[in-house]
Image (cartoon, rainbow, N blue to C red; front, top):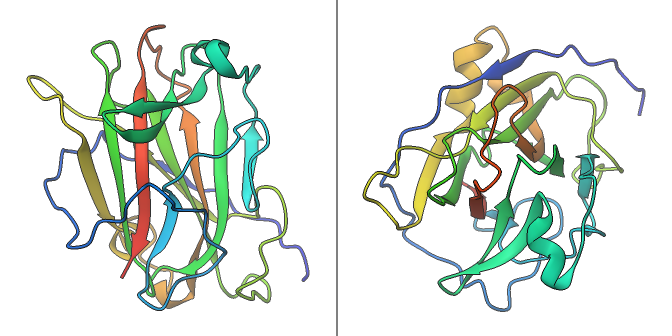
Length: 229
């Protein structure tokens, strides 16, 4: 495939409101493994449902910006990224005040085929909305010859970037929250002149916010990232 220099256009959305929309079907965390690339017959792609070694991510995962340290065992909570059991749910814990990071997964998904993105989040009392972000990278299909298995290694060439702040007002709330987005509508909002039928989601990353000072004790938890029809 001929490499094409991307035209970067980064967009930052305001902190999302808590959305009480749940899917009709939930997947059990226990026993789930990371899926292969592509979309299942049901149109769902589970992106973050099971823990994996953060110091050696599995296939398709990549550090665009690796944390300064990734200790294991009892020392793991001194990291900016670690896994933690929250009421029986294994979640990715993020402490951006410890250090910057961007961990992402390559995908190759037409946004019109599986346009709905959802993820679950929880913040401790010291965390603030937007301490961390979900980074969405899009590429126009005409920019090269893409195949479903054409994922390669590392962060792919990207034409458009949207950064979604994770979190919201948790006053008096201690339960997990779910945010839900229509990716095709989101992309059309910022790039209305691009034919959505040609747009593919090629990167989903989790990153520390660069323009906000997080509390050193602030932890945002992330779980159950799902793409669906």
